[in-house]
Length: 497
Image (tube, rainbow, N blue to C red; front, side, top):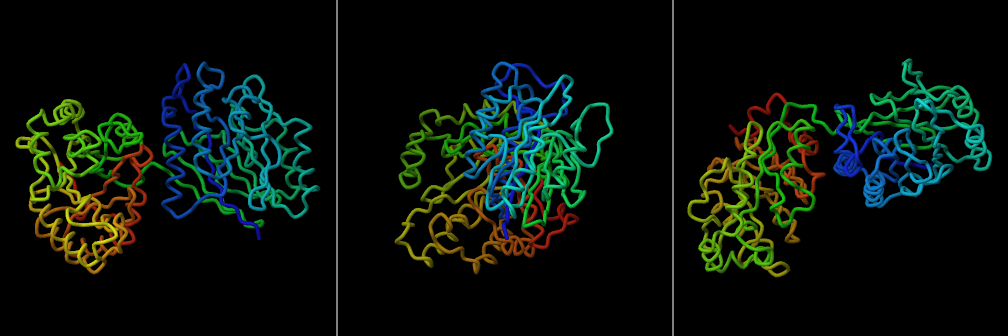
């Protein structure tokens, strides 16, 4: 039986390079591209890889504005980057239909994916956004059914069809009744629409499942995962905005990170605020501030003390520049910190005087002197890791970053038998354990052990890409899997003054 997983997004109203601004302040049009990528990431964290992505129109806010073509192209590039087929329906804000179809590479009509037929309708938009399906297009769905017997059909259009929306603004097609009748005659499995920003949950009429997706550009920034299996249609809505008490992100990178991709302090703070994050800690790699990129990534500074001494004598790299950059950003809801590593002799890579002025230190084990990937045994790696971690914790760090990620990157098994021992060290030194999903999958069993031993938990986006910023659904799911209820968050989660 054909099965199809669809990521459904609608009404991004994206504005970046286009001239003009949206007249609706509730629409976060500047975030459209980020929100679309975050929707894909959310499903990835849930273990879902869609077979196709459907964009149900109003990709941009004004397709006629100068520069809108660049915004459309950016969205199309992002969609292609997902590596699966993408179908983009034209909306009333999207400008000329031929240009829209060309940039997204989506022709109207039938597209078959995984044994399911998806029919794209780009309906005619008239003055006042009054929209009508042409007589020619009305025949498409019945022709598709006749020419492809047994093919499950899913209709895609911008305007909602069912239930009826009673409003002065013309949300519905003028000939919607004719469209509904055609869908019923053709045995359409599902009809997916956008345009009506609050959305409409799934409903069934004459055997056809109808669903109207909410606008991704408005809080709570909703989208949907639709699964088609034969004639069975399942719709799961998701929201990118946190529906829980505000959380603290202890680990958010900036444009000063060599390993940063699309992050900047301003963008991270804007996205985090929009998604309901209560506090963001801008926490930058100290080793990347002290050294140029080549020397930083060599990690020779860890085993050759003169490199650090020289950097500290010679103006300490970009440390002062970073301080000047972030200091004005500190305010209620924003804190400042450093991600710090050890030197081979056990000292912290932190110049004299550079400990002052920060709200927190996130201690990290990125590399361990003496460890050789592919040569050092599992047992020896475990001994080195525990030794280095305890040395790090003695330096009064606030949080231990991505515990046990070292083993994954080293190509070794995660030593679950060390969970109690590491939790005991964290408890002894009063250091929080970070829940971190950046190239990492935390184990609920370790989280559970930390809670058992009274270790605080810290949530870190470890944002290197803006799509990671503010994405805490997987973190909260791990808490749930570890048996931590929301009523326990105040007791369990780290909070900063």
